[in-house]
Structures are given as structure tokens and as C-alpha cells.
Image 1 (cartoon, one colour):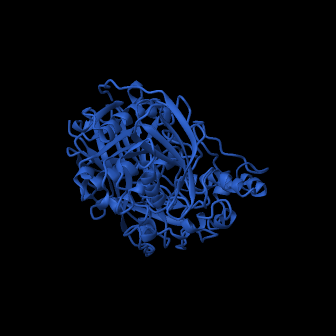
Image 2: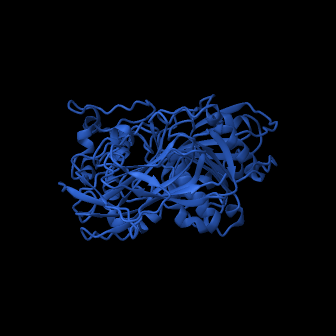
Image 3: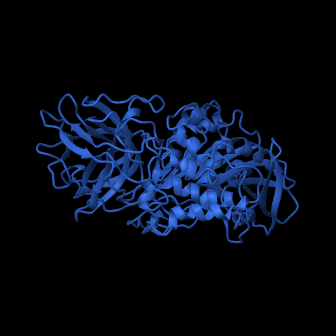
Length: 598
């Protein structure tokens, strides 16, 4: 990514700490402010955080960076966090509080009345939640949510396919709960909570990347049943946790925090930034697409922009890097200066600078394999062709040692594949779109040795094959259970055998027809399941092979389906499920790839 950087005036800066703001219901929130040290009024950039304001006035930090170029940088502690008053209710509180914060920021004595929002992860969440207000704050002129979900049922608490994102939920609640308990002077509970992580018998799961900000649970705590127990265990630490578990079905409860559900009333341009291995990679593309197509306001409809990089969740949003996603170094072109990109964005929308940013193509993605950036006219790419690669086997696709084949030839008369899914022995997570547990690219060959993983592999491609866009698996399958999961993983097999994970996803069978109205299975009956793998941009280079893995677990990334049909979180025991995957003329299982003609 390259662009011309215009000459800009630089200012000396000054900081104000713990500046108070009163919400509409009388709660005081506190913010640190870094601003130009001159008389005058400037646009405001607002960030709202649950992690504390430490570092917000760092002379080498982003707030100082923006202030030096003529912005009032405001970092506010969310309600019930650190310096701010009130009780913390994650996610939902941020809509009204965010609205109030925007209008308060517009009235600051150094403000010219024009406000933009910025920030990554939960600081992206606090932005998307502002967009769930109808109407949105009138003083808000532009947003730049980075690395956040736009639908908190689809890629924050739960996953698009219906399972919970179990690998990070409890550790994240514990991580945030330390401040909650500290505010209550409950040192006894701090020690109790930490015991789940590093108690005498815990055996902490370490992450090879070393990039996570919180600690994974020990395996026995990830396996603890029933899951609903965590509502009681974390009652003081994370009082909202039990309510999230009790609302596993999508619907009105979650629509409050679904930007796509509110896209029609979004009024402002947004620069969405995310990455292929981010746990919330669903967020940016979904919000870009929904607002671009549904907003009633032309400035919002035409003002959406999208950047997708090759990283995982934590880097390089804070530190420019070509790494941060497991085994792969994506090369020097992967480095971006995100602050400079954001500065161009806000200069245009908050200062009316004609810097050409809105004349550029609206979508920029990093294409794996060839490790290069490319610009697109829209998302999904208008040139994309959906091409089905069908599953085949004769005697059994169980493990990489089976006879599973992936090809563009439709199946004829073929026997189905079968495997046994035992929740007591789930397929272990090996990299992927995670947070707290290990993230990014990992060699998948260890899990491909398992008999409960069906492996379908293409012949080596003889010329570069680019896929850029959403990837879907159409799976025909049946189960002996009333409810179960089917998982899928798209893999790039290198000539030396290295199996590089590109995408993974799952479907909880009860949600095969609707995320909000679950229907159990009729055991033994074949159904057509749609597994959303989200999206990628990659080139299978000559000599590489396309691989699809099918199983019923990916743990602890997703919670284990106990195969009993009980409501989420309630089961204390599991049953084994016998799974059947069909690939025949009447039931042609396939992965649908978004091929870009060359």
C-alpha cells in the first residue's frame, strides 16, 4: 500500500487527564485528552476503552501522533472500567454511552464540533455500537473501526455457525474481571478467579506466538461441564456472562448490537480495517457490504472503505509487522503504517483535505501466496466466479492417508464417508481465527492424521489459481444424534507437504435453517448444511494442492457439541455421534471457491 503524503502542519501538544463527562443517566466517565498546545479549535478523535487509559498520553503513542497533526485525541474509560463510574455491562452499554461521548466531545472547549472515532478490537466495538443508535449522533462525521465484529452474535460471543467462541470467552471475561473485582476490593475473588488459570493443578496452556494479552484456560477448565456453571463462577467477575450463555439463539437480544441490522440508518462514512486471521474477520466485510447496500444516506452508502490484511488480531495494528499470524512471514509488503492511513481518512472527512483518498478503489486486500496488496472495485469482487470443487472418495476419506479427492468433476455413484465424533476426544484447535488461544497459520498435518477428520485433496494446480471472496461449504450429511456439529477447514498444501490453514468454520445442526429458530435433527436423515468459512484472498501457486477437511469439532476454538440436543450450556454429559457425509449425484457435497479469472 502506497500513497502520497501531503505536507501537514505539526503542533506541540499538551495533555489533560481524567476530564469528566456526565452520561444521560448521571454516571461520570473520565477521559484523557491530548491536543495541540495552541489557541484554536480542532476536530476530535474519540476512542473508548475498557482496558484503562494507561499510555493514552504516551509521547510516542497514536493519540500524540494525531494531536501533533491538529486533532484533539480523546481516550475515555468505558462505564464501570478503571477511572469511570458505574457498573460494567459489556457490549450493550456502549451504544448510549458512545452517543453521549460523541456529543460531549463536540462541545469540548478545544473542539470545532466535528468528531471522528477510532480504535481497535473493543475500541472498534465501541464504534460499531454507536452506529446502532437511531438516530446517530449529529456531531459524528467519520469512523474507523479496526479489528472488531459488526455482529456480536456472529463473531464475538458466538460464531456464524452457532457454536460459542469458547477458546477466548472465559479467559477474556477473567482478564477484564480483574478490574471489576479490584474496584470492589475483592482480593479473595481475584485469587479465586486466577485459580482457574494458574492454580496448583492448572497446567497453563502456553501460546507459541507469545502475542496474546491474556492467558488460556487449562484444558480441564475448557472441558468443564455444564458450561452454564461459569455463570455462577463468574457472577461477581463478569455478571453479564450468564445472560450471554442463556441467549445462544440469535434474535432481538443480539440485534441491539448488530450494525448490519441497523445499516439502513447509518449516517457516516467508515473505514473498516481487519485481517484474514483475525477472530473478528467477519466484522469489516459484513459492515462494509451491509452499509454500502442498505444505508438511506448517500454519504454513508458511498463512503464505506475496507482494508483486509494478512495478520491475526493483535499485530500490526499497534506495531507495523509482517508477522503476527503464526508460522508465516508475509513479506515486506505486509507492513502498513495504519496511523498514516487513518490520518489521511480523517483529514478528508474532518478537515476537508482533498487528498484523493475517496478517489481510490474502495477495497484493498492482501493476497496470500503472492503476498501482495490489490485494489478491488467492491466487496465481494465483481469479477469473482463461484466454482464448486466436489468431494469424492471410494473406500474412505478418513485422515490424510485415506482416498479423499477434491475436484471440479461432479460426483456420480459413490459410497458415503463415515466417522465417529466423540465429544470426549475432540479434534484439537491448531491455529486459525483465534484470540488468547494460538492464532494464525499452523501446519495442519497433525490433525489430518486423525480418523475422525475426513480429508479431500486436489491434484497439484498447474497454474496460479486465485480465490478472493467468501467461501462456502455445501455439505450433505446425516448424524445418529439429535444435534451435532460439522466443521470444515480450507487448506493450502505446499509442495513439501506443509498444510497451511486458510479458513475454518462450522455449523451447529440445530441452526442449519435459522440462527434464531433452532430445529433438531431427525437422526439418520440426510440434510444439506451450509458452512460459512468467511472469506480470504489467496493464490494457490503451481504445485500446490487445495484441501478440505471435514469433521465435527475444533476445540477449544468452538465449544463441543455434546450431541444431546440440550440447550447451550446445560449439558453435563455427552453421547457419541456416528456421522455420514454424502457425495453422490443427488447429494453433491462441495466447497464453493470464489475464483478470480486471470
